[in-house]
Every structure is written in C-alpha cells, then in structure tokens.
Length: 124
Length: 107
Image (cartoon, rainbow over all chains, first blue to last red; front, side, top):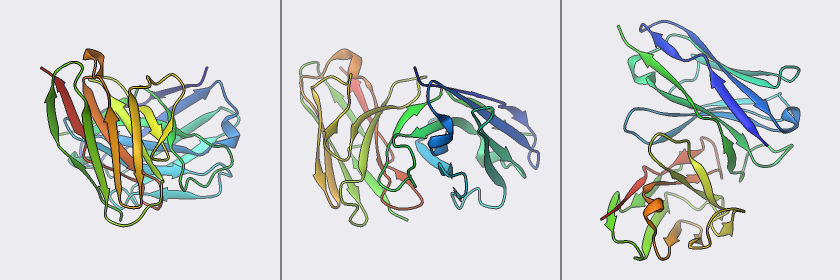
C-alpha cells in the first residue's frame, strides 16, 4: 500500500526555520513527482511546492518563493521541505501529496495519495 | 494564476437529497479539474479526476461533469457519511490552485 508519512512540524518563532520530511513507501518513489500542500486553520487548501519526477525541476507558490526549498532523497524515499524566514501566515497543516502518474511534469495530473499532515505553528 | 470559484460555500442537506457543487475557472483548463473530499481532521481524498473520471473505491453516487471553465460535482442520494468539505483543483497550469471549498452539512 502507498503510504506518505510527514514529520518535522512544531512551534517556531517568526523568522525561524523548520525542515519537514515526508517518508514514502509502497511505490517506486524515484519515478513520481511529489508536492507539499498546506491548509491554514479553518481555511482551504493551498499548493506550496513541487518536485518533479526527474528531480530536476522545482516549482513554488509565490507566497513561499525564496524562503522554502523542496528537495528529495531517492535513497531514503523521502521528500523534504526546508522552510526559512517563517512568518505567522505560514501557520498551517502541511501535507505531502503524490502526483498520480509516474514520469509526469504535473500538468493535468491529480494528487492521488496524501499523507496525514504535520502541523506548523509560527508564533512568538 | 487560474482562480477557481466554487458555489455554494455551504450547503445543509437531508439524507437522500441530491447535492450539486459548481466550480468555475477564470480561464479554460480543458478537463484538468479534479475533486477531493475532506472530512474533519482527515486528509483530502480524491473523488473524481479529469472532470468526470471515476476513482476506484469511490461510491457511484459521486459523479462529475464539465470542461473548459465550468464544472460540476454531483452527489446523488446523499448519505450521512458524505458530510465533508469538497474542493476542486486545477492542474492545467502553475501555480496549481484549489477552489475555496464547499462545506456540506447533514441536517
């Protein structure tokens, strides 16, 4: 079975950093593009970042560009989200989500599996 | 950025009712439109892909239609377990975007 397990969330002060991890299992991780999607308390879903299957391209929402970095380690079947210069408005539950098709650049593709999420709270 | 606007924002319905949720895109996205269900304290779950394609394991009372800029999610014969928030999602272009969500409450 496909499983995505996020970790690394917590409470951090404004301006601080956190690194989230998403450990994948049950599929050929190296062949799939991976994403981070967040949800602020009581709000809707917001796509944050994408890491394509060839691991050569990354894309970011404007709200996090220059502050967040998505990366991955195929040997550990893990995707990461390094979050720097955190702001109060980054407070959210962060989900890891997989594109449904292998070797995809993401255009036209849906998210078929999601993790349970990890909570990030930015507050002084 | 492609903006997705769902209507209504909230719907209170009786079991066995039919629910219709609309998602309008600010520009044409073909059929690169997907629907998710999110129950309280759970992760989103894929319901419909490419506007109208069913997903294995999802009850047949869920169906989708549309193309271009207007899309519809229909829940036939609503059941109590369908109480959730429903989101549309477009992957036609970057950034990928979601609708604001439609909360369906059971009376």
